[in-house]
Image 1: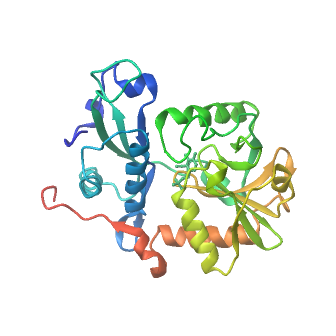
Image 2: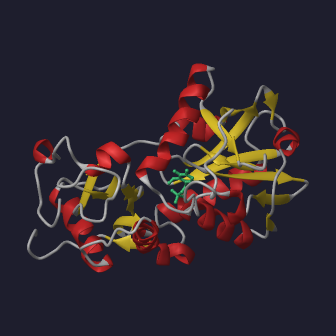
Amino acid sequence: MNGEFVAWEDAKVHVLTHGLHYGTGVFEGIRAYDTQLGTAIFRHREHIERLFKSAELYYMPIPFGAEELRLATHELITRNGLQACYIRPIVFRGYGQMGLFPLEAPVDVAIAVWEWGAYLGEEGKRTGIRAKVSSWRRISPDSLLPASKASGQYLNSVLAKIETHKAGYEEAILLDDQGHVCEGSGENIFIVREGRIFTPPQTASILDGITRRSAMAIAADLGHEVVERDIGRAELYLADEVFLVGTAAELVPVREIDDHAIGTGAPGPVTVAIQAAYEDALHGRNPRYHDWLDVVQVPSRAA
Ligand SMILES: Cc1ncc(COP(=O)(O)O)c(C=O)c1O
């Protein structure tokens, strides 16, 4: 926290922390995997870059450099003796200033690591999940900044997630303010129709997902055409295959949406092939994607 290593139980903030009241924080969700090259953080630099962009959009200067955050994360993982973990950096307006004008509140930075299994479950990754189109629309650029991974913005995902959970489904799919398919509550979305892969473009108010970019690269490497274009709600139901991608969830097939079976109702061949290649990339099993891995260096101080 703010440049110091702090024990889990001591990693606390004041109740008048600005970000706690007004959602003035930005964060990242990153994963490190136990790979053939050692513990490696998947697309670490890209995540840190997005953290800086998210902060910039909310006028929050981060009081550390990208490389400092990267190396602090390495040391944190090493000190905790973790081979694989979830990594949560958060930058937020801290204690010292209440009211809506935040620019005089300090900008605090914390990074936490812990072991966290697949967000939508291992079974979901294998057999697919049931999803529901939420009645809540994804935040629009008229009111907020969909490109920023900002804490307060997640109230939108939280509402969709609660609604979906109460209705007995495993994940929510949000439409954008125009009624086009946007994304999951914490994942980007892809559909497969007649051999082509489609995913919504940036203009659909998506978060520019790093797994999305990885899945697009892998799909292209496997010889698939990936088209970024608006997707209508009915196209979801009529798709041969649908899958969700995100750091926490990884790549999850969707077998049912709003009680319509997707394709055969089981994960389809394109989804399964991209998922397998993605798992190989995460675990360092394909040298083609080794550039995506930031192998954790044991810092001499912590060794
Ligand atoms: C709303 C939302 N969309 C998409 C994603 C997927 O992004 P990424 O693949 O970078 O984890 C996430 C997860 O961070 C998210 O919270």
